[in-house]
Structures are given as C-alpha cells and as structure tokens.
Amino acid sequence: MLLQKLARFFSSDIGIDLGTANCLVYMKDKGIVLSEPSVVARVEGTKEVVEVGLAAKRMLGRTPKNIKAVRPMKYGVIADFDITEAMLKHFIREAKKMLPMHKTLIRPRVLIAVPSGITPVERRAVQDTADRAGAGDIFLIDEPVASAVGVGLPVSDPTGSMIVDIGGGTTEVAVLSLSGIVTKHSLRIGGDEMDAAICQAVKRNHNLGIGPRMAEDLKIEIGSAYPQENEDRIYMDAKGFDLISKRPKSVRITAKELRIALNGPVTNIVEAVNSTFEQCPEEIAGDLLERGIMLAGGGSMLRGLDRRISDATGLPVFLADDPLHAVANGTGIILQDVDRMAKAMALAVE
Image (tube, rainbow, N blue to C red):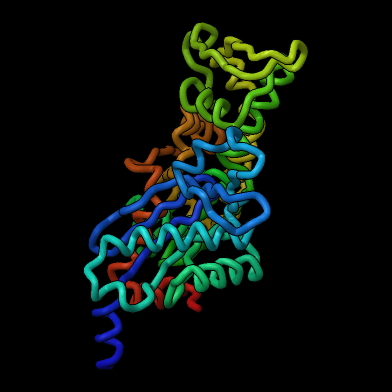
C-alpha cells in the first residue's frame, strides 16, 4: 500500500486521444496540454525524425525527396509502428515538461482511447507501442465511451445514451448504459473519407487535382450534409493542378456541388446510426426517444449533419459543446479516479 502511494506521488497520469488526424494529450489536473496533427516528418530510409505534429503537417506534399511527411495512423489504428512510437515519445516528452521534477522520475500511467471495432492484435499493437514510447501502466478505453463521458452523458446511469463520434479515420456509434456499451457500430469512415470524396469529385467534374489539405478547407468552409438556402451562390475557389494543361489552376466550387460530393460518406454514417438504433433493446429505445443522439468529433461539425441524422432516425440530435475535445476530455474525467473507473468500465490494462 505504501509503495502504491509513493508511486502515485512520483508518477503522472496522462490521457491520449490517439486519432487518425489529430493527437490530443490530457494531463491530470492540467487539462488538455497538447493538440497536434498526427503527422511525422522523417529522413527517407532512416528513423531520423525531422518534425512532429503541426510543423510536420505543414510539410505534407511540400518535402524534398530525402524527407517524407506521413500520417502513421489509419482508420484509428497504427499503420506504421516505428513512426507512431516516435510520435508518442515526442508527445509524452512534451507533456512531461509541464510536470514538477518529482513527477518525471517514474513512467506515467497512460489511458489511451481506441476505436471500439479494432481487433485484439491491433489493441496489443497500441499497448506495445505506448510501452516502447515510455508509458508505465497502460489502460485502453473505447473511444465512444470516452467521448460520451467527455460530453457529459450519464453513462453510468441505468438509462440509454447514444453517442456518434466522427473522427478523421473512424465513426464510432454506440449506445451506453451502466458504464458499458449496449450496442455499437465502428465504421472506418470519417473526415479523411469526406476529404477523399471531395478530391474525387473535383477531379471528375473539373479535371483539377487537389490535395487533402485543400479538400479539408473546402469541407470546413462550405461543406454540408443538408441542403442550404442559396447553396448555388455559396462558393469557394479550389486551387490545384489542371490535369489537362498540366498547369496550376483555380476553380470555383459551390456548396451544392460539395454537398453532392459528400453524400456517399454521409449516407454511410447515417446508415450506421440507424443500424445501431435498430439493435437497441426496447427499454433503451424508449430512453433515446426522450434523450436523443449526441454528436461529437471533428466530423460532426459538418453543416446540417444533425438535421440529416434527425430526419433519418426521427430522434432529436444535438451537437456537443466541445466536439473536437470530447474524447480527450473524457479520458481526463476518467483519470480523476482511474483505479475505480478501470473496474467500473472494464478497461483493458497492460
């Protein structure tokens, strides 16, 4: 018991939202201390890291031949172990700089949010990578649970709550009750799939090649999932490479054109929500009629998505107050009493 108390005094607790597009780090008693893109730039053919996070994202598509900027996470799981390890080491090291000296002497306990649909092998890969990156005790929590906790849903109550968390690589749909998942649907479609759909539509309609950053800007500025008033008059210029003349070119893209381009991934998300709802027990379905559906994650901020889901399900749909930080905030709340919560939520621990 004394050794446990000493370990807690000298160690720190860190929550990590290890996302496909962004990585957020929550430190107990300090809040979110780091929010960076999940991008690493390194020297080609070596393990030498040049930049991590925002600085590396700015290099995407702009690096010389000897440097490669990559995103080591795909669909919410690790696609490149070495690069993910380097990224986690960097983020944990940066977070520990904010701690008093005695808190840096022991490896931190780390709570990592992972997609609910990943395989046991993929879960083990996350644990092994975090261990090599300098973590101590490693807890894993399903992203929809962390997200639901982060937006304030009463997940421990004997009533049903529904969360739809749309990240960069995955969409997590889950119904929760009594600190557990009643039914769920983990869809490997998110913001990245939306960006890819925009790239394809612009290429098909205008013979213009654009990169994912341009597509993301279009999505944020004028993208929508539901018809808008005067959407033919809402537009933005897309800058890219003319595939016929082989010259730089700018093309005007309307909000209507973008909505049509996004219809495929949006429809898949709506169908996943409907499928999850249809699997609910009768009593919980009644709860959801009253409580509705909560949206979180960066992708949930797409204009009109709440109306599109509401029309499809017949349920009220709400956007979380802080959708971008829902998962990270959830890990922070759980870290306040991680030992008890680990038992209540059956968190996996390494």
